[in-house]
Image (cartoon, rainbow, N blue to C red; front, side, top):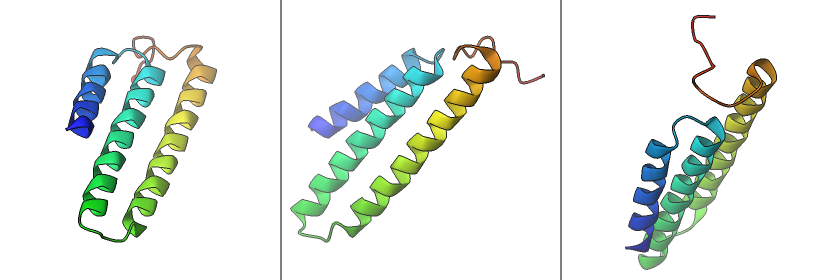
Length: 90
């Protein structure tokens, strides 16, 4: 029950803070953390092996690193992380 509340609060914060890229990345990491917590509880409930959870953590770390690199490149080119100043037509 707690992980479901974590997931939906992450989705709510993702939808409400859609103007800043950094806040969107933080809420995505919170959603990933809640999914990992849910998967860990599910795997421990059925006494399965936790190998898939380590693969999931590896992929989520790669996703976080990619998001931070996009954030840094966006701040270097545009000066801030607002989506309103970022134009796709340029």
